[in-house]
Image 1 (cartoon, rainbow, N blue to C red):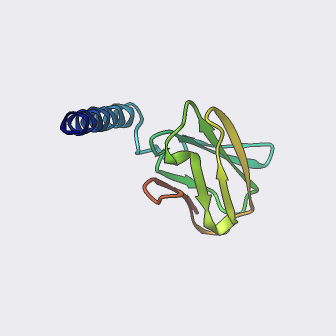
Image 2 (image 1 turned 90 degrees about the horizontal axis):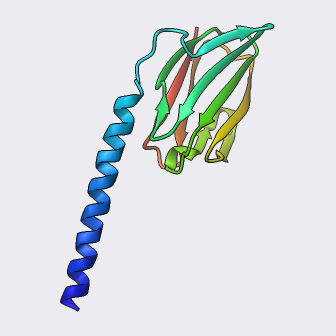
Length: 131
């Protein structure tokens, strides 16, 4: 029994260290800061805000224009963590994102203020500040 417990503890430690190291590597490859509007594009009178979901949401903060029809595009690529369970309370949106692909979410015509999205556990979040 002691051998089994020791092996179990060793496995948990190895997996935990792997998750920590993998998470740090993932977060260093994607910046949580943005240049205002770098992920925001207006085409044919519609504003598109693009967010990437994997190990969190990137960029964490975006600035977009209020009063313009807006579509949120959430991109995933081998996303199997809790950021794949997206909740946007103000839109009544709650959905599991596919592991790889794009989820298109119609925001409507937002007024001035912030739109916040988060994972179902509340660990990861993003905000779009409509100005």
